[in-house]
Length: 263
Ligand SMILES: [Zn+2]
Image: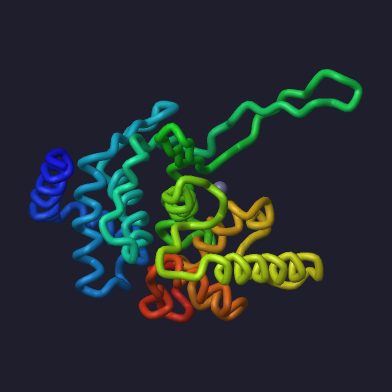
């Protein structure tokens, strides 16, 4: 009790410090959706970023150097995702590991005749239950600058963190004010529509990595929900509404219908 009182007081003090102007410049350069926030949203994000950066450890891997640019670009993208969630600081997340590029993870596949083949898989991001998240810096930059269509590795990994808030990573985020069964039925129907579109070779709002599992469907659809909300709504207005209810915000209201990729 006393600990949580002191923690909220400390967070309030951090959030009330003046926001460094150099951080503003980084957000304007590196987090394109920042320009579409209204004044209240931008202020909420600034406070969230200040506390997040004060509490989480950032580590450079593979010789990568952590700078303010790196920390603020990651926190800036994550802050927008948390706008509807109130004071959610992701207590389970302790450190963010940043790599200079895609990183390789050793994998092995059993062979039919016995033995196994060892190989390496390239990844742009990952979240581990022990409290670490890994991100590739080029992936972070591409997502922040909307260079990779609706993809964003930061939003993807934070969607996994939000999914985990109710205890399980199962593709279902906490749904306090929603009818859970109705939400699950709605998502299952959206997954079916997505699979049918893939099978028939039709264009989809987001890429087929979403069909890996329920967990990846929620994370990949959420990337599109924040990065190109009109595209998601055009392809599947029902899925958009389900995500709007889960994330408790409506990015379509602020993001222009066709966000230009450059500025
Ligand atoms: Zn994932």
